[in-house]
Amino acid sequence: MNHQDTNDCPDELTILSEHERFLVAYKPEGYSIHATAANSSHQCNFTAELRKQRGDTTLFPCHRLDTVTSGVVLVAKGEKANSELSQLFERRKIEKYYIALTDKKPKKKQGLVSGDMKPARRGDWKLSKSKENPAVTQFFSYGLGNGRRLFLLKPHTGKTHQIRVAMKSLGAPILGDERYRGGDSDRCYLHAYGISFVLGGEHYAFYCPPKTGQFFTEAIINTTLAEHHPLALLPWPRVL
Image (cartoon, rainbow, N blue to C red):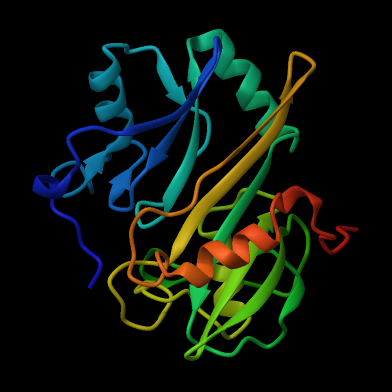
């Protein structure tokens, strides 16, 4: 089971980098980006905790990560910067890189997953064969031994649960992802590993490995990531 009580929230969020118009922070798994009526009393609130920690109510996360997902979050300083960075996301000018683990054999080891996302039961989503407004995910994967496989993923779009649904469609749901029938584990093994973009004529790239998870902290994970760093230079499958 992958539940986290508010009493388990860390005392302080980690700031990975800070600049004039934005900062980059690490979101632990178990944190929601924003509070909702459904999660306000059961999960940690990343935005509220970060604003409290910094003493600044004008900090705005520019994108969302699922509660079960850990990793890199880009946070704008002020409404003007939030508008600028949000426009970059809308224009798909910000590249995001994820890593995930599975204990199932995928239908294919690298390539592209593309299809429309359709609502399913109990808040789930499913991938359809139609491509009117498709979710597009590029990926590579590497065997780690012991039946586990590491996926390096680059979502070209930003749909809800996109990577989790893409992995399930490959027959390899993410380890620990209860919603999409992943194998039981100590956490959902999905992590936002890096982000890359150009702002004001300057290129920025930030990467951070996962800090928790029995299998994420194995030496072979860091070795495999180091062999393929930076992920931006991988020959990602072409998006038509």
